Image (tube, rainbow over all chains, first blue to last red; front, top):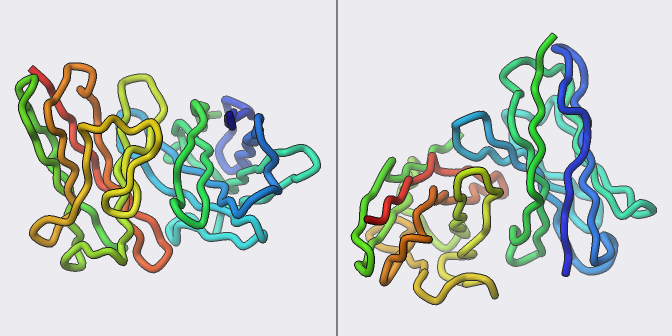
Length: 119
Length: 109
């Protein structure tokens, strides 16, 4: 079955760019009408939608993060990625990648990875 | 940005039925908000339970159901079990912008 796994640096310095990758196993990222998502969870807090990229490469972002976020697909590696620029301590969170389809837009989630923003 | 409101905490007795609700700051929740419900247990990733008001996934226990109730999205748990103790999040779409509720901590006694 399809599984998702986040990876990337656990520590990022303020003002730098946070870069995470989600590796998809058990299925091809380019087969099917899928949407590939990122959400995050600040420590001890609720969930926040960051955005997603569709099978056609169209991107949809949370307006509050839109100026700093880029989500992209790498079909050759069966991965998709998240880049968040100009990070501050407020971006410290567990980041989850997920998969969905045209409907339902969300179904599977990765286990999450903690990213701490600190000098 | 719109706000989504859930009960902060709810307690239910094992075997009883409980309904969690999800309200929108913009008015009644409708099918156009495509309500989702996710369950998250401590230290775990969220798990999607309900999509598009009331559609279940293959892994969704039969005791969970979703609906629209009184202008809100609702998640009903019929016959609560101790393993259902978790945080439950509602997720609504606002013309393609998705907003999570603050979550409801469900305690099963």
